[in-house]
Amino acid sequence: MKHIIFISYFFIFSSFFLSLTSKYQNNKTELDKNIPVPLVLSPAVNFVADSICTFTWTNSGKKIKYELWVSDNLNFNSCKQYIVKDTTFTCFLGAETNDYKYCKVRAWKKSKLYSEWSAVVAFAHGEIFKEFQQEIKISPGGCNGNCANCKHPCGRRRLPKN
Image (cartoon, rainbow, N blue to C red):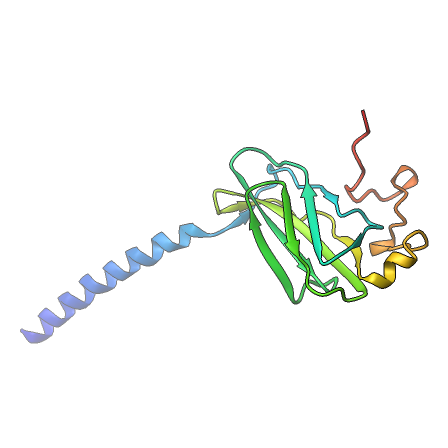
């Protein structure tokens, strides 16, 4: 009799826990190609940032949050992650490192669906670059900043000025 009661309880609890885990499987996040990819507008490729930098990007629709990553390396192995509700964000980059920083952004909808990442933008960070700002040519991925003659557009083309 004790074995039958134990087996009954076992099946009741196991079915209960299986029903809980099946609900959590529906909370997966996934790429949604219908969400427009944000285009980083600033900082520009040849921009030299101080300790404080303002990032702006294009709007990807209503009820969207954005995930901004700022890193010291192009692989984003160690980066600062920001969740932003607007298309403009100002943050403290820390002490000037006289090195390059990299940023990228993507859009999130309802905490489950996200867009592809924007193109990575590289910008200089430090006092040493300010002296040679006119001569700096930052070339992430072979980009020379001349979008008009680009054979491989990366999506960073500027909107025409009115």
